[in-house]
Length: 166
Image (cartoon, rainbow, N blue to C red; front, side):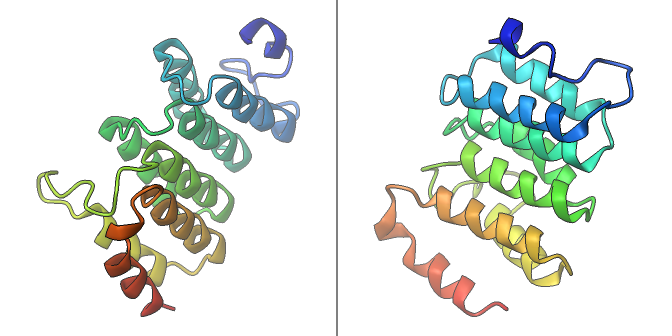
């Protein structure tokens, strides 16, 4: 997959010649490796995310990370995607929200209760209500919905909480 996508992937240290093409290639890399948790691919996508401030590339890298790490509930990757979401860029934030949802697919609404000094679901609900960007709110809503995948019986309290927000 890397060999096929190489002409389209961002080059380290280079300015994005075509950010939409390169962001799409990062997403495609995640799609090719979806639900495999291939550490080499995840590391590549993490590095791509770390090495850019371009919102379109961040969007593609976040989606790629979510797809490649689908269902792993990896806390380190979740923190990285959350940091992108908190940058308050609508495009990157939407990709980060959806990427977090893919990463946490099926984890359930109680995920993160054991994380020290954090309540991830409540933090996301609060941030969705406070942000001025509809795209970020939409990404968070998708994240929370994907967390409840195959956990419908646990989702009602979250659904009620979401219905009470804007």
